[in-house]
Amino acid sequence: MKTISIESAVALIPDGASLMVGGFMGVGTPERMIDELVRQRKSKLAIIANDTAMPGRGIGKLVGGGLLSKVVASHIGLNPETQKQMIAGKIAVDLVPQGTLIERIRAGGSGLGGILTPTGVGTVVEEGKRRLEVDGKSYLLETALRADFALVHAFLADYAGNLSYALTARNFNPVIAMAADTVIVTADHIVPVGVIAPDHVVTPAAVVDYLVTNR
Amino acid sequence: MDAQTIIAKRIARELRSGMLVNLGIGIPTLVANYVPEGVNVFFQSENGLIGTGPIPEDGLAHPTLTDAGGQPVSALPGAATFDSAMSFALIRGGHLDMTVLGGLQVDARGRLANWMIPGKMVPGMGGAMDLVSGAKRVIVAMQHTAKGKPKIVKECSLPLTSVRSVDLVVTELAVIGFAGGLATLLETAPGVSVGQVMDATEAPLLKAEKIEPMRL
Image (tube, rainbow over all chains, first blue to last red; front, side, top):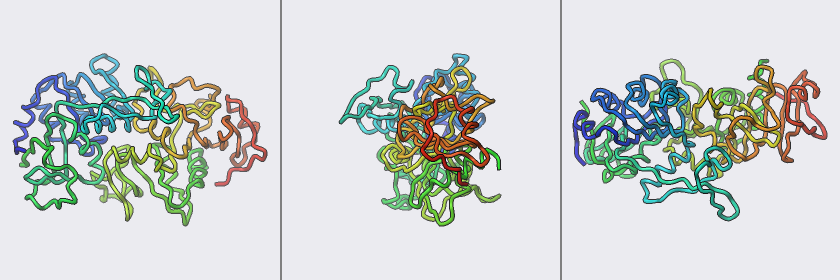
């Protein structure tokens, strides 16, 4: 694990990269990394996240700035701009049930090829997928998801890279931290090693690659 | 009493102490305002909270304590927070006793469509498909008609949320169940006749042996 400035951290991300981004309607999104992606004018990024937040907030800034070519999410309803760019053919949007999305990411970070879920059986979500019967019940085979980068926001990070999260800002963050080749973290507070008790570490330092320094 | 209040009050009567319950956005959210006295339930927000409490007073909202719509909520004593994988394990894994969702259409067999209108509204399904597939009991809270057109239809023309039948549909006119596999009129709202419900419903509606008045 290395500590890094926000500018250098985001400079690691090339145009066209795939990014998993934490947050739920903007809550728990690494907002400083988002702002820096916009400032560095990245392009053709593929985003995997729960939602595209709202205009001017979180991933909504990436949509508004025209940085994205692909979105995999469960919900885009609070961001009309995403729908506009989807209809205009600028962004390819893949809508995935929320529970399926998070499990596909969990599978990607856990060395699994995918998961079997009853969600979506018999609906448009089934199109192009394999249906399997297990003990008389129908499931869809949903494949694992990984990304080049995970952009994670924590409440506390220690200087070793151990992370803990705050309330509903946890959401996708600890799950995506397992499922990307390079994991970059911002935190509300960076604290000395030992301040986060071992029992309270949610994401262990071993999976974190870069911790962005606070000003 | 307006339509939304009738629906929310009637659904609140389905709550039992100890239940884990997920309320969707819109009319379902209002159910929390009418929890019967002495009934203690756990409300889940699928963004990672059990023990969701009322909207905080002015000045007490916290930016990292929000509901599934991203709006500020409070956490009751004994609340718990967790990540999204855990949240949907609770939903699909048989731990969620009841979910209340809005609806666009419900068909004669109780199948719900509530997540998109092709060409018009494509917000994404969010957690709706998991909730309907996974919850032990599914209750739909919706107005009986939209712009005069029935929402309880023979066949859904809109994309389904799940092929699983919902358990109950509660509208401002009636309570309709699907225990026998087909839509059955169980209760009518105060001042509403069986004929009025039939006229406002496209799906063939069986009548319960005794149609009860809706208690609020």
